[in-house]
Amino acid sequence: MTLKQQTISGLLWSFIDSIAGQGITFMVGIVLARLLSPKEFGLIGMLTIFIAVSQSIIDSGFRQALIRKQDCTQADYSTVFYFNIGVGLFLYLLLFVSAQAIADFYHEPVLKDLIRVLGLGLILTSFSMIQSTLLTKKIDFKLQAKISVIASCISGVISIYMAYSGWGVWSLVYLVLVRYAISSILLWLWSKWKPIWCFSLKSFTGLFSFGSKLLVSGLIDTIYRNIYYLVIGKYFSAVELGYYTQADQFQSLPSTNLQGIIGRVSYPVLATIQNDTPRLREAYKKIIKSTMLITFILMFVMVASARSLILTLIGEQWEPSVIYLQMLCFVGMFYPLHALNLNMLQVLGRSDLFLRLEIIKKTLAVPIIIIGVIWGIKVMILGMIALSLIGYYLNSYWSGMLIGYSMWGQIKDILPSFLLAGVICILVYLEGLFILLPPMPLLIIQLITGVLLTIGLCEGLHFKDYLYVKHIVIDKFFKRNIT
Image (tube, rainbow, N blue to C red; front, side, top):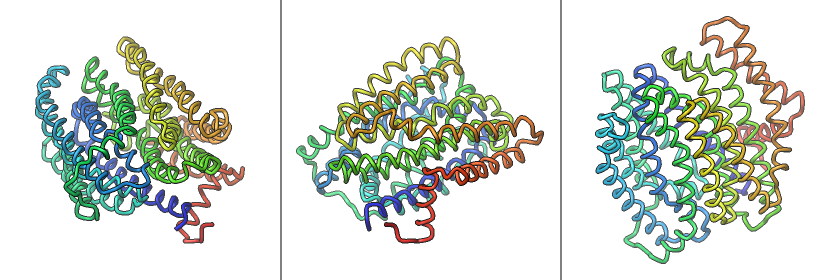
């Protein structure tokens, strides 16, 4: 199989994995949002930063280091495996001891028991991180997709039953734990890799020299992305955090998941051609242009249909989430562009630059958080949008310097997609203003309009980025030879 065929196959199965796994989780979340209250979602949101930071520490940048290294040994994998387990156990004990302090910080006593149970997920994921990394390194997402679907379905059914039976916020806790447990068990059963009794200091030192910078960078980014949950939960209320959490989950479904699909496939693929700059640059251009076309269209259509989307899927009790969703979409639509530029720094082995950029960008976030505490959540989100644009400039400047693809070159390539998506957004939004229908039929009309406008305008204008994506899809699904 050629590199192009391997990449497209990886993208397809990564897409299926994300859509099936995350899609099922999203649908389960919709059902739970109708059974539970905003406060119960807000309580889980309060704990998000502690779990996310712990997960980032367990990874420690070793996943990227293993994927990038071309000649990994059993000693490398086993060393990281035992390190992950040790760190996972330590962090769980730390959360267990700190549970009372976390509950006191938010003035929510129930958080003490919630964090002690939810934290068990750290141990579960640490046992299967190497198996998942190996599948990603091989660009094998078919098995991961299968596991994701099974785990999401079973955990979803159990969680919905618990919510319906009156378990309240605990149904959200077990949604996470059951999914982690099933995923880990299936990865162990179906993966061919098993650890050996070996912990090599040489392997650890070599991998950590690259991964340590990514660890610090990952921690900074994780804290930044979740600090808003902490701030809103502390200075506003669990209910308000529940509204923000739902809006953030809606906007992240297309933006974060699309980047996850593209990023985890493109990273190992680009790593194989890291020493061929012209080829690397051309492949990178195609990835950025096609990714941002899809991202802009999805996010702009979500902005236009936000009200009918929220009211249809999770009900009128969540209507305050609408404005948060519309604003957060303008933050999320640039996330894949950020991540792809940072991904390039990892491919080129410049984790030092990666770390430096994360420190600079996240330092700029401090005044935005302070302003948000004083002036409110909406003003804070406006600051997040501004910071996103500044962050893109910083990321693209350095990645552009290294491979000869500058920020202005990127903007020139993606601007047509942005303008096209903006036109579609305006037309779909106008439908919501002038068509007087209940939320559900209005949402269906808006989504159909968005699809028809996208296809019609792209076909009529012979939009190159659209035609490139269309060509890949047709070739893959109709099994034509890929040259």
